[in-house]
Structures are given as C-alpha cells and as structure tokens.
Image (cartoon, rainbow, N blue to C red):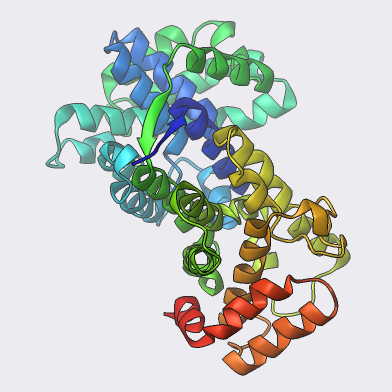
Length: 407
C-alpha cells in the first residue's frame, strides 16, 4: 500500500488553523493553549514526547466545537452549563481517528474541575493532562482581551492571582504552581503574539521527522475534520462524507484507480473545511443571503485551498477540494478558473457536491427528488457550467448515486 509523506506537526497545525476559524475574532486560541500547555509541561520536566503530545492535544482540544455561538461561550466565561458537550463530541471524533485516538480521554475531560477529576476513574497522568488543557484554556480566556488591546503586560499579574485562587478546585495545585512560576515574566505573555506564536510552532516542527501515514490513516484524519465541519448545522449532517462517496464512485466510473482514487475521496471529505469560518446564522438562514453574507460564504473554498496546501503540499488535494465552486465558464469562485484549468477530478467533486446538496434538506428548501436534481444538473450543463461527461456518468447510474447522497 502506498504511503504518503505527511508532516504530522504541520498537518495538526494547519488543521488547528481551521478550528480557529470557528472563533472568527478569537483566532489562534488552539495554538496559544497548546504552547502554554507545553511550556508548563516542560517546566514540570515531563518527557519531551509527553510535552510534544500535549502540544498536539492543545491544538486539537476544541475539535468538538463547530458552531460560532458555542465558541463565544468558551472564550467568555470560566465555566458554563453545557461545557462538557463539546468535550464529549471531540473525544468521540478523536477516538474514531487512529492517528490521534490516544488523545481522546484527556479531550473528554478538558473542562472538568480538578476536584471532580480526582473522583473520576482515569489514569492519574491522563487526569493531569486533561487538567493542564483546562488550565491553559482558561488562562487564554482571561488573557485574550488584554492581548488584543495591548494591555497584557500590565494585566498579567491579575491573571496569575486569579488562577491561584482556583488552585485545588478548578486546577491541580502542582499545575497552578508551575504556571505561576513561568508566567511571572513578560516573555511568557509576549510569546503569545501571532508572529512569535507561529514562528515558535514552525521551529518546533522543524525538529520533528516526517511521518509516513498509510491511506486509511490519512482518510481517518480527513474524516475527523469533515465531521467537525458537517456538525455546524443539522442541515449539513454527513454532507462531506456523502460527497466523498459520490466523488469516489464517479472517479471509479471514469477509470481512476489506486492512489489518485484515494486522493479524490480525501478531497471530497475536506472540500468544505473552510466553511468553519462561516457563521451558522448564514448556513442556517431560511431566506436569501445578503451581499455581505454571500461574500462571507464565497470565501470558504479559498480558505479550504490554503489550509490544505499546508497539509498536502505535494498533492492535488488542495486544488481538487478548493476548486469545487469553479465553473467551466470561469464565473465561479474563488479563482474564476475555466475549462482548461479544471482537472477531471475538480469537475467530479463539483458535480458530487451539487448533487448531494440538492438531495439534502436545507433551511431554505426541502429535499429535491432525483428527477428534479437530474434536470437541474442538465440545465447547468446546457448553460456551460458543468462537465457534460461527468453529469452523463452520474445519470447513467442515477439511482445508485441518489442512495449514496441520502443513505
């Protein structure tokens, strides 16, 4: 089986950028939590591999958060009712993804008070790791406004004092003590500025050898993030996975096989990852979008393209996924590429996306019948927007594709 050279560090960092899009205004939350957690772990002299894995856990800790309204609650208060919901979702997502499944338990408990964790039947080291994520997460909540306003150097002593009052209740005393020691210097807080944060993460990544992942592992990683994207709205449940199934079958019907076929499926799974930036108020809107809302929606395919470039820099996956709203006439978005610039795989994913979206209920319309969908696709072929051969291939086996779209 062909293996793909994947830089796990850069992959997780890039996917964290996607998760941070959910915050819109609170970007880099995952990166800051990760870097702070690693710094505290290093101060406690944890083994280097433990420090590295807590960095990755920090970057992925909010993978159960898709909705912007939920993200706002996370970044506005120390505790709130329902905080465990995204922890449970995140643990569920991670446990189904072998490359990162080992992080699932600590993600499950990363909003659990220390006093409650002491009564929870889990390994003590996992208990500490989960609480370290909670600590770093809440520190970031307390510091974000001051980072944005430039007042962090005058306000950080108050943050340290606040955290100390929660020792033994919300947070493990040894973790609070370690934080208080390393945070009582300006450098700890200044390192949270975007350019330094990104630079430090690149430096850490440069010291880690490239890892070989097989195709099943790559697909599970892609499926993890497709689940996060599709959870933004009840109207997009399983959309990405169904698009991936349709695109894979279309590719098979065109004789595409082997590694290229697997890449088509991965591109299908990840084609909407940039949609994490789009508010659910827009996605779930029952009426027409305003020009401003439509502009926000249109940028998601560009965000998809840029995010995937960081993960698959030697693959066509970013292009095939990021170009799924381009048309043969060159009037699509975000690049306005036309016929000659669109690979067959791009055209396949475009048709798969439209077909599945029409088969799925949306807030502004009911599910469309197969007959209606085929007529719609044919009208797009007639107008010159969709590839006639791809639509013909789908039409030849329409019942199968409809089952893939709705089952």
